[in-house]
Length: 265
Image 1 (spheres, rainbow, N blue to C red):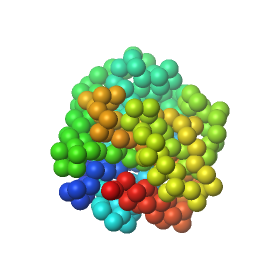
Image 2: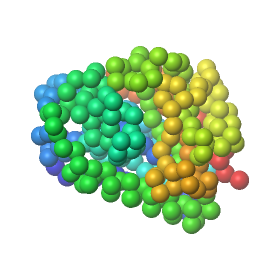
Image 3: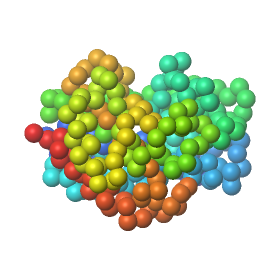
């Protein structure tokens, strides 16, 4: 656990790049002040972090950025999603509230208690969720001003076998799942992604996870903001549930770099 971890980082890319590689779920860091509100013992918490963390996705994004012809920007969450999940709606719109996994989780991937009954998540929303959302909104604003458009590539991973918390875990689990939004994912963006990841035995759409992240200021309102979620099945690049990365990480980073380069004029 950590006393004063960095909550998030914006890593600069090329001034002309519209692309932001967004990495929201790669960290295992939980500040001591937040750890006190979690009911799991240390061993159970480490096991939960193995399951819930998108391990090594920050490394995939960093390698892709380094290998791109025009360096994209990177926005990386420095805290575990067990602190707050910046990709959830912070209100009743969030469907994952049904399993206790809204912006502040009350339950685990196996639907067990993570926080005590009656836990008030609003202080964490105010302290962590809103500053993150505001910073990501500013990052998109900057890309719109500098490049005339912004493209958010959401970098995630998911387990080979479905976990009990998944609401839509009964569908296909391809090596790479592309999560889309009807407003923010144009056909051209999807085509470039499909081509970039074509060597991974095919891609799927919106299964087992659908949608993609767009700051609420722009969500459903500004077509200049494109977005796509890249969900990578973990057996393609790491030992599950929370083990080391393997050689697949390099190939995935190269494919992600190809996607980034394909979005440039």
